[in-house]
Length: 162
Ligand SMILES: [Zn+2]
Image 1 (cartoon, rainbow, N blue to C red):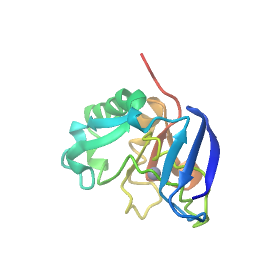
Image 2: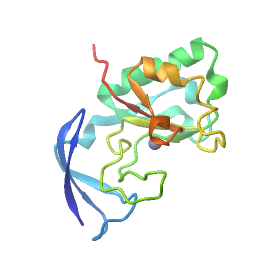
Image 3: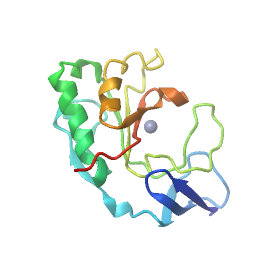
Image 4: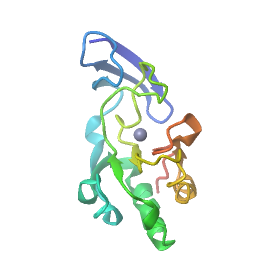
């Protein structure tokens, strides 16, 4: 179980260990300190209720980011853009990053912190299918993974707390 420290831009210094006794791409991780996984709590996103892969809209997300995620989907619906949301491949996933290059990363994925969501993973057009909704994510403080070759991925760059 390699142990490692990572300084997260939103959470500060966190310590974690992986499941296997060697560094394995995408390995499951457990936080030892600096991050409380209990802060990732259930959320219901009504607009995703009938979207394949979304577990009926019942997902888990970091509590500090839940309102902005709800706001994103509310606005996607209000702008009549829900048709561009084809599938959802989930939010919380306690694992290392899996760079699209196929390389090993020793850094925790933002899915492990419950601040990322994947959509339209089967899009052959490198993000074309989610491009119409990307500006809405960005408006509410998310970064689009297209900038790091992961166009199905959106993650919180900045919490928008009341
Ligand atoms: Zn992702």
